[in-house]
Image (tube, rainbow, N blue to C red):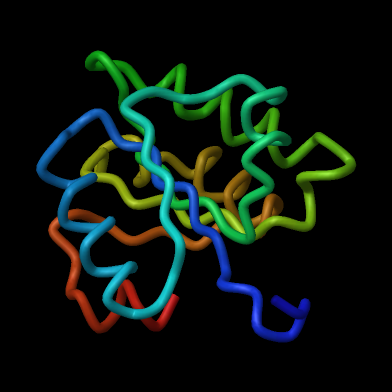
Length: 124
């Protein structure tokens, strides 16, 4: 397979199995290779997967700290900083915090609030 015909790989991280199943099926139907995880991965795992994009939730086990830590760690890693990250979360109170909004803007991370429109998700 030549590099021009390589299938883009998307890493989806969410602790809700139904969301993982939905996104995996949706993205696979759109022609993407998809890897799912129910919790944030460590950087070694992310490097090994070499995703072309990451779709992640913010809240894991009832708290946004693991998702936020993963997001900022990925953004600060020199090799992963180029990988687009989309935050797909239902944590709307957290997303209304001005400091969080500013940080997401600085990190260049688009946000899709759950429940989201499938067409909006695919556009991002």
